Image (cartoon, rainbow, N blue to C red):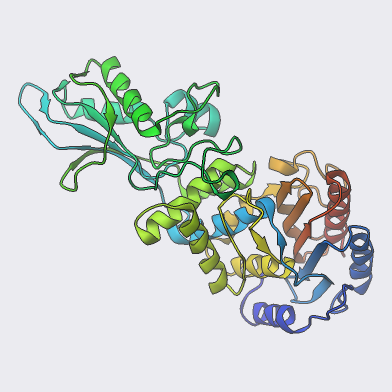
Amino acid sequence: MVRGSKLLAALLGVAVLLPAAPAAGADGDPALGRSMARLMQSAGSYSGAYVVNATDGTTVLRYRHKTARILASNTKLFTTSAALARFGVDGTLGTEVRGTGTLDEEGVYRGNLFLRGGGDPTFGSTRFTRKSYGGGASVESLAAKLDTLGIQRVTGRIYGDESRFDLLRGGPDSFFRISPWVGPLSALSYNRGLKTETGHGYQRSPARFAAARLDAALERRGVSVRRKYSAKTSPANAEVLASVDSPPMSRLARLTNKPSDNFFAEMLSKDLSMAVHGRGTTTRGAGVAASFARRLGSRAKLADGSGLSRSNRASPLAIAKLLLAMQTRDEFQVFEDSLAIAGRDGTLMQRMRSGAARGRCHAKTGTLSGVSALSGYCDARSGDTYVFSILMNSGSLYTAHNIQDRMANAIAAAR
């Protein structure tokens, strides 16, 4: 871990010792730098890389490292680091049931109930959340809490309230319509916006769909609701009757980064906007993540939270700065643990299954047509920690993975 003067030296080295030619840096381990530079030369002129020994602050490789390139899912590094900083590793996202009526002595709630979403990507049925995430906030838990209050009958109806996000269902890559790579975005997302728990089709109205599921959960507990469910924003004076929380942000970051989950990343991006600006939008959420990166000395142009848009761009140097700066923060261990482990899990389970990188490198992959990226941390055999970023915007996926894996293995093998 880089601390104090060592981090300052590392960042100064990043900022100042930057030759224009795409060549290996000579600050530390020249042989390692030269071998990786040769690999990068075979990647083509639309690729760049930066590698720094984070323990002693010396730069090992600079290869077209200042040119901003398409990030693909390396965008999630910016989204999750900002979310961990904003909400804290133990922070949660709540889903509430609010009411505008009164409960009489006979258990009759005279009024309407509002199921108000708070941007929790895990919210859904108990069965779905357990199967998909190992647990999460469920509609059954809310129904049980309302039952515990003594509610036996509701004279009004249940409304789904998704007003904490805008009503755009997708990001810029899908012209803000539903994307098959994400699903419908909503502050009141239920089972990821899927019509069925087996994943067939998308909900047309997530808020109304979720309200119907709460209605059904209450009916199963013997609580009758007189009028049919619908969708509507809850009044400002509505009273909170029950609430359930998402898993902690540490878990949400892990569920985002290890499998590279686009839905989670886009939800977290809107959550950032909701927390800072009062309403969740993709554009403002990307802006919050970019602003957080700037405060850490990194610069990126971000258009969404997942990396599906080709407008997400940053240089290998900028990513390295973000990763270095994260090492000094309280959220670092959770952030690093959220990344896939080479040869072990997530999007790197089938890569680097042999060689020094296995179990030693935590990294975020990135893949779009013609784009491949790998950035993260490697604990070398020497005991030093390296930060690296490899961004490739041309060539085949097979070739890109081969080069990236060989570089990661070389870094991890350093003595």
